[in-house]
Length: 466
Image 1 (cartoon, helix red, strand yellow):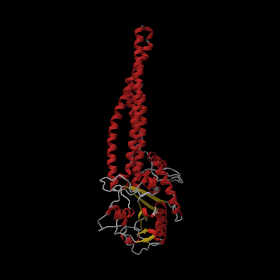
Image 2: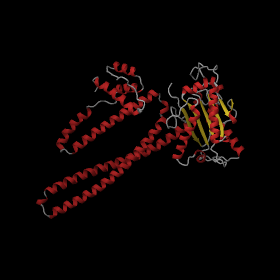
Image 3: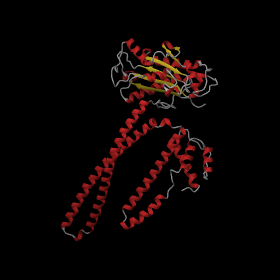
Image 4: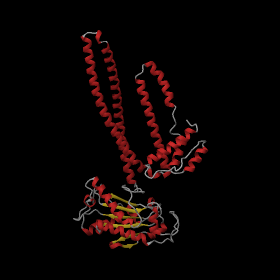
């Protein structure tokens, strides 16, 4: 069996909405209400869900008292003031939502053992019984959180056994020892670096608890093998920020294009001045002192032009950096806006198209730059002739966006070698897959994608596809 990893995530919330509480406590008035989370839960396994209260006591889900109500009762009992009370726009982080889980095989084994469960949200699993191992695991995680943050700060600890992968949710109030809300004080988050180090250390400590249940600490990432749940609020924020970034990008593009035009104009001006100076220097012996004065004036103009060019280069570099940052930020939101709706195979096909498209752009830019530099030094009559010749050379290239290349490369990337060979044969292509063809253990996705693309392109071009 492959290595089984733990899953750990924490979200900082400024308020705890009733909608989120209903999802965690599985409260739904009818089948249509809260359809977003009801579609991922099997109602015949709802009775297997449980929560843990003081001293590690296991009880069924208390659906009568919502989590926002529990938070109010907790603060009232301890005489702690909610800093976001009566604020239209809450600005303080007052709730930490922890999620604990692990690889699917191990979590299912702890919750259901070897019982023949039918995996489907509309299947009848009313015969399934909850195993004691999932309860032991949940109690150990609960005690760890109590020792870490205090039992008074834990509002709810809920375990779900009605999903494909069982998990646990712990709601913690970041109240310090002096009875005040302080996220930085409780989670050591005075700056991003300290908060990151604190979370890495917390991940290591939780791994010590999970190790006895067969779950290992993964690489240093917020989640290993999982993805945080994206809410509609997260999408709305992402859409607004992407719109703002696109406006900034548009303004920077206009400014960048203006600077690029001025830069090229300055380059042309410098070349013209150098040509004039060279011609004047060759004929200086035939002219008097007035000619020398003209040469000095042209040299001064050249120095000013070179200074302008340096300034334009600096501005151009700054705008390129700003555009690169905005483009990277927009890409970071792609998985929020589009990533959830793609299957793994569709996502691989999209990534492969993006990779091949970037390769084509790089090839086109390289050819265009070589062509521009070569033609810049030719006379007008020869430049026209070479332009026609270069056009033929530049257009005679492999079509990197060929659908056959993309499809074969995507199949190879996902490990469907037999389907890739069949597809190639069906489209009159010859695909030879080397022995032991597979992704290396330490090989990155980028390197593996590039190898698959090169093998697919070789199959298409070898078959006469141009």
